[in-house]
Every structure is written in structure tokens, then in C-alpha cells.
Image (cartoon, rainbow, N blue to C red; front, side, top):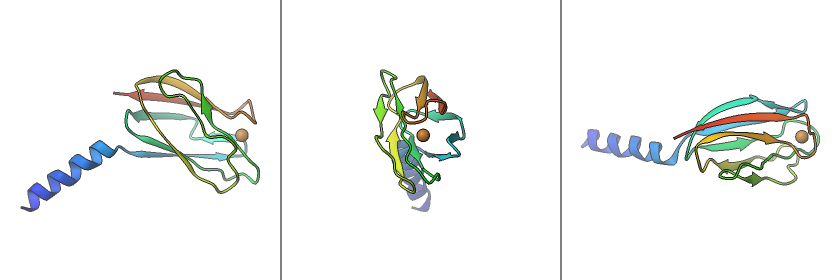
Length: 102
Ligand SMILES: [Cu+2]
């Protein structure tokens, strides 16, 4: 019985996917590169005392979290495989490179 329960729990963890934390601090995405799997989530934090944004124009994974105030967390889901860049619309020098695997 315990083994069955354990199998069920690990299966649901696989289905739900992992969450990857990306902080925005000193106008930098930390980390600035990220390896993820399709179905994982990315949670953007903002540790700066001013607003940030995160968006990508990637066709499959397109998102735009809008104006992200300090201390607010926003989570997005990785929908498809491939490499894509995430930028901040407010600070054009900020870059996060995501590599999404199947
Ligand atoms: Cu920013």
C-alpha cells in the first residue's frame, strides 16, 4: 500500500512539474540562464525597490507579466520546448535565457 501511495505521489509531482525561482535584483535576472522542462513553472520575484516586468515574444511560450511591483511574485507556465529569451520591458538590458526541454 505504501509503495502504491509513493508511486502516485511521485507521478503527480512529475505531472505538476518543478517551479523555478528567478529573482530580479539590481536590474538583473538571477539566475540569467535557466534549464526547464515543458510543464514546469517559472516564478518571478522582485527584490528591487522599483517595478520590473518580464515578457517573451516566443511563439509557443509567449507571456507578459505586466508591471511587477516590488515584493510581488508572478508565476508563468512553460508550454513548449525550445530556447527563448525573457526581457524586462522597463530595463532593456535585463536578459534571461530559457532552455525548455521536452
Ligand atoms: Cu526591470
